[in-house]
Image (cartoon, rainbow, N blue to C red):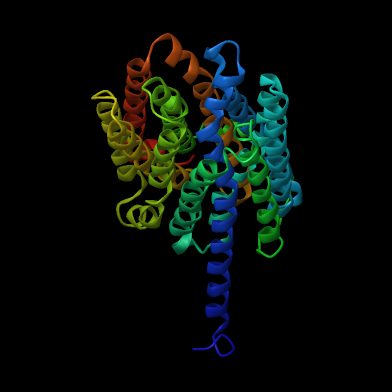
Length: 400
């Protein structure tokens, strides 16, 4: 059947799937700069900081900005719509890359740290692509749409570290300066795609909107937000310090970039099937499987310090994060009405990325003060809490 002779329903379905794929590429472009930043940030921070325990501070500041961005992003999305908000996020990401480059150029640790502010705002706004996917998709296609858009990170996982490897020495003697200048082109490409994708308008203003406190107190919301926070926080705690531990073990920058690349691929590649698994088995069993995989990551990380120990641990960590985070995002949809979606999503991301900010800033300090083994063991109590909340009787997690 040609497009011209297709029924209106078939044409709408085709347009909906096209929009989901465009969001997929937007997510890929925005994530590529973040994956590249993960591979570089701790190493650049270590080279610029006089106190080496501050090596992960730039990533920590970026995550603080990601958390802080959730509230103004929610206001913009609610009043101006998704397109305006995503455009602002792309511009912020562009400014972040340029500020990181300036910090390296000036050999200024604090200027480099300042780049985390706009970069974090851009990253925080980009987290809403998964929510936009759920809004443009039909109810039956929604879990797959969320999962598919998040798999845009697969392209980012492949492209980001490769870009780091091949551009790190482009502007000698300034290591990684050329990389940040190239990364600045990615949000520009994202803005081009945003100009053609169909996005939902701003939701109608409620005369008396539901208070955020009421939404947060719902058991369904608490379960989703806590699961998402544990998923992202535990993953980030280990991921951020992995390049530092590998450097201490004598590995080169290219080796740690490869491990981060494998980790990033494992974070997003399962998204091609995670939505189907959730549609068949439900979000909670998939979250539980993800928590078990993250616990296995700890076992592998503590068993040795060869290349395969680091890569194997972070692959398990990536797949576990995907199952837990996609499952938590799906669970969040059960916690609010359509009119409450922006407020619920904003509150959720504030909690999730507040946790991520704490783990990013604390990762370097824990690694420097207590060591790699303690850093990994800290995952286990948090994963246990997530399992308890996820496997709690289903009636306790339904929205009020």
